Image (cartoon, rainbow, N blue to C red; front, top):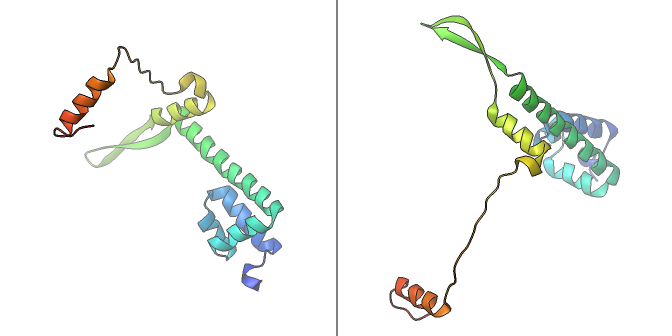
Length: 140
C-alpha cells in the first residue's frame, strides 16, 4: 500500500475529528490528505476504524440536532432595517425545525397519517370494459 493511502495514526485522527465536526466524508478526507475512496477502503479493511467512523458520524449528527433544537427553541437574532438603517433585532424561531424534532423524538405521536377507505364492490367485467374504453376500444 502506498504511503499516501496507509492508515497512519495522524491521518486517522485528522479524518475522524473532521468527520465528527462536519459529517462530510469528502471534506474529512481532504483534511486528512487522502481521497474519499481511500477512506472507504480503510473503513472496509479496518473494523476498528469503521466503528470509530460510525461514532464520529453520530457526533456530527448530534451537533446538527443540537443546532436545530437551538434554532427551534431559542431562535436566531435577525437584524431589522428601516430606510437602510439598523433599528434593532428580532428573534426568529423555526417552526419547521420544531416539527422535525417532534417527529424525530416521538414518531408514533407526530407521524403523518393517511387513511384510505374503499367502499363498494368492483365488478371485474365492468372494470375491464371501462379500461378498454379508456384505451380507445382495446380489448382487455
